[in-house]
Image (cartoon, rainbow, N blue to C red):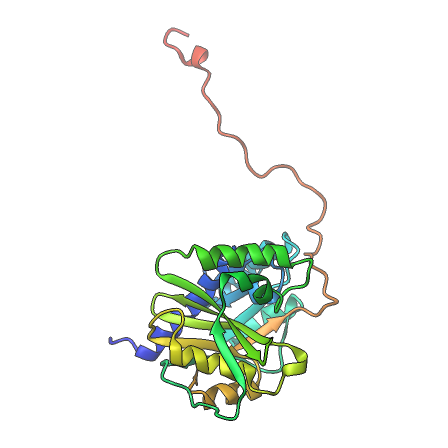
Length: 290
């Protein structure tokens, strides 16, 4: 059976999404049914999520306990990304553990990388950031308390990439002020445009769109077969479609309310060990003649 080219690009984009977290110091644990993407030092859902790959009805209890124990032991609040339509048993299992679906779906958008429509009315200028601008780049996503950890991870991934990958921070300026930033991360033949952020006073002036258009036109992380972005609102999805993206896969994203307690019910009173160490034969007793 010939694989669907679109599905191959989707799988490659999701793999590159996980690799993005890994290159910034996280890790991914793949278990039957899902990939558990984790970054203990950046404790936000963007870096701590479960990518559901297919959980069977008869195995869901063990799966949820395993997955949640992995995050709760680290005091992390993950989100679950489940492809739509969500199976009834997966929805019921997540709700039983306190997770609730977000109102808007999470949509993976793909583009073949062709030039985006130019906006001649925009005064925004975009450039690939230089190493001396790393503090400016890091300031778009972190507070002063979190910045040293993120800055170090960004510096390592930026200056010392692994084979088959490249990370390029972008900055957008209005006049002499840096107003928007993004991270372009390429893994093999797919590049994701991540963490597009704009300073509040400059929002609505086309800076974010300029970053995306610059990426498609200039391919700062090297030639690729597809670009990917996630849209978490119909408004963003519409903007990306105008820039040449199309919806490729839709997910329902489940999250915990802020009031949720990160714990499992008490297992009851302690019991004795359920295993015994292996017995070692007594050489003296087993020797011939004894």
